[in-house]
Image (cartoon, one colour):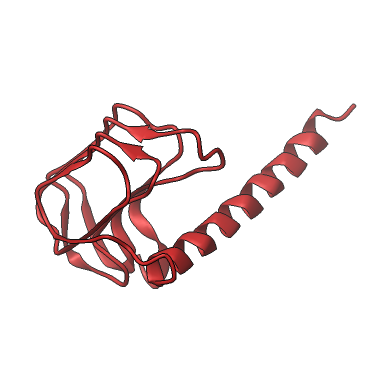
Length: 134
């Protein structure tokens, strides 16, 4: 990762019961590990487990771990220096908890990511329409 506004490993939207483990993430980005809102804010990222990921070679510009407001009962085990947890029932064994500033860097990075995802999905919809059109 180099100068990324995303996470080294990111879960977006309705992701449940996944194991994300034993990965090495290096470089610099907004986050090392992230679970966040996708296109439908009602979809929860829940019961996922981030375990034993090596993020020691990554410099995070916002936080090592970011759990957005649509996260529920996720587990983060391993080493990290900073954490933003806006979800409910998440269990994290590392980092200094930052509650998050709605006007701060996490909000700006989140807004940029949402714009990029919307552009990608829009492009995908146009391409899909062109392929399926008679």
